[in-house]
Image (cartoon, rainbow, N blue to C red; front, side, top):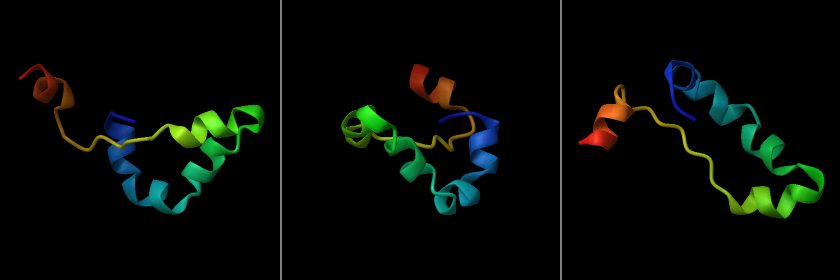
Length: 51
């Protein structure tokens, strides 16, 4: 997750149950558990990646 909204909701996301809701996707549960979700907090991630 990247962008201004993600960085403003950092504390809320950690305590919101976000990961549990993402991984409880019925038949996709195994797949979703194997994927990771990352929060990008760098102010200019595009420039960092280009460098």
